[in-house]
Image (cartoon, rainbow, N blue to C red; front, side, top):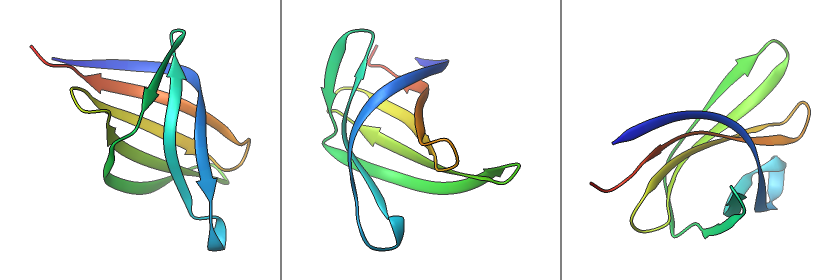
Length: 83
């Protein structure tokens, strides 16, 4: 079941050459999730801000998270859960 969300989250990430972002894990609703795999990425714009979207998995769940490079915030936008 897919659930649409729009909540700010804390993300553990690395920033490489050219501001390449790689999320490693995040905290949502007081719980830590370790990202096992980034399955898809894409970019959009919100005004002047570059938004980097990531579809990631922690194993049982698939998450959609995004990074706003303009204000340097992370948001969870959805989750696909088992069952």
